[in-house]
Image (tube, rainbow, N blue to C red; front, side):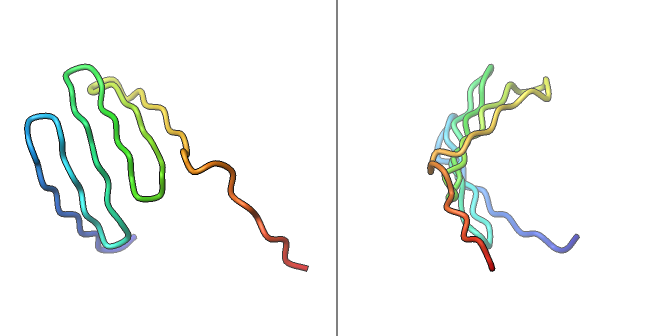
Length: 68
């Protein structure tokens, strides 16, 4: 655990930008669906009030370097 800081800017009724120490995210809000894209190319789709969400990485596969 630790102290976290987030600053949110609402551009209009449907678009919100969040800024944190490690990056940013853009959220498109509607009554039935929220879409969030963050600076690590992770897309989250969620249905408000249900606890249902889906996450996917848009950046493709990560290359893992083996340590020998």
